[in-house]
Length: 476
Image (cartoon, rainbow, N blue to C red; front, side, top):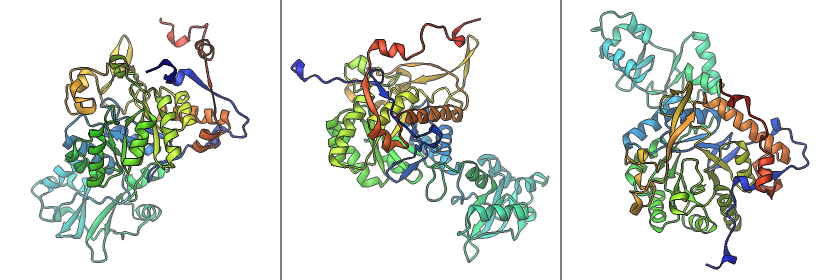
């Protein structure tokens, strides 16, 4: 290649956003976005890494209005279990209700409550509801050989399938009950409303929910693992192809098969160029693209192979392709986003959402236990191409098959950060402040109004704290 054909692959620290005239206060900024038919109150997805997103993180993300993507470095059964856990965490009307028969023993009811962490069970005879038994009922039944019919509450208060959260709350308050069986006109049990779910719905009004009021969740898959995709399909709202380099004929063909046979919306990635976006959006019916290659803080792909597509450059390139083809496909900036400043630059360049790994690692909701080292708390954070992640073998095909013996990630420690809600709240506050400086009321205006300027190394040093030693870095 001739040197005059070289492109400048800029990244976050190469540019700044210039301030603009504004009437927008940060508190009035609207950060809602959409990925296909999934509406998000905050434009944040958690990365499908095994030290970032399992069910606890996915539940927290959905409650805040974002979206969690479950990692795939586990068995199919384990990933399905996590997806089910997210769907069961909140559901205005629970459809897959755990029940007992009148002829079951009290000990069996006690076992089911303990095993599933629930405090009450509808009692059905055939399909018809005949009663309800609670933890309090079984607690006072000292004789475990008693039958459920001996201790259950007969003729419980019930509602029809058209019940609303507001109506359910009033009925529960009136009768001082915590569970409302939902029945058909013929008396058959079709669902259950719990006080907990009504409470969570009121406590998280901006949560990301599906049509049945359940929390939404996504799951990472290999495009070559159609069995995993089919197993997850009933329990997830989106599948996310999880490969380091999506612009590969075998990967594209395999993804097309999944789209055609599984019937769940797909986010494809990762890609980093205009050409990759062009091929993906013209050949595949996808709702989003993960954009950025080699930019993650624990990714060594660029260092090991010399090949990368820095996230900001990749977002700009992919956005250009989407504009040319007028495609309604979400751009998800993935990699190198440590804080709201990088995220703001990604939105200015054309992103519709950002995917966070490092920024969420170390929180209480990320997998793993916190450890004390030198008087400070830490949690493990590792790349999916690191030797330890690859040793579990479930996600080895994220990287090209010939290079299975080459690590493309590292493992390290990040400071323990506490609740993810606090971390995300600060992130969102910083993002809204950036929009306010630009004069952008929403993501669409950020794309159109933001002015980008290159900045020198000296300039970047000048706009970061300098010439003082932060108090938190002064050791005792």
